[in-house]
Length: 54
Image 1: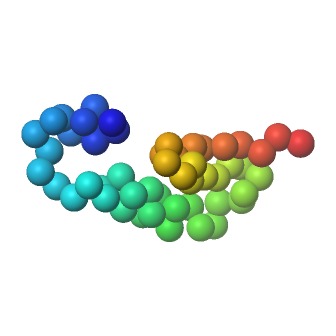
Image 2: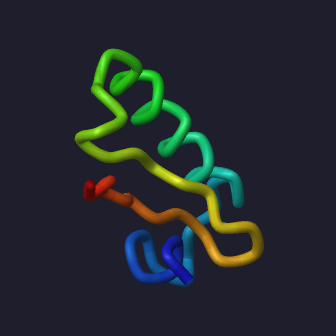
């Protein structure tokens, strides 16, 4: 659904484009403190940015 909404139905790239983008974002955020939030994988659903609240 995300690929269709962002790039449209005519997108001819990899169906793993979103996964690769999230991987690059995670790599960029390696130094980011987990208390500030993290990207979680929701199997079968997608991704979620969650912020830890104490």
